[in-house]
Image (cartoon, rainbow, N blue to C red; front, top):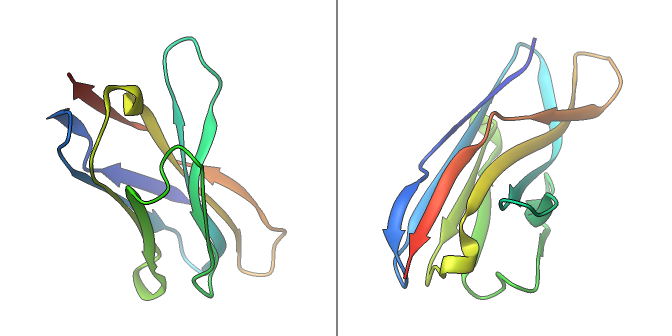
Length: 120
């Protein structure tokens, strides 16, 4: 069984910062790519940033230069440092890990989501 536990969401004023964390728990769980997605009310879930095991990163254009994704492979944890937050960053943020248990097939595992609200 794999469990992703997210933390760090909350309410912040525009221009402020937040740091999200997501820890993956599960014996013999090997993770390839770790990602953050977000979903605002009435909108589709979108990719915010992702990071591969070797540290390669991808960012959505809307967050480039403001957000930084990082990971600690030893802890199976991914972080999202969010700076210069804007009201349009308000959404539920979800962590996703693409990994496998033991010698099983790779698949996506999702966290429960954490609310980020940016006030103007």
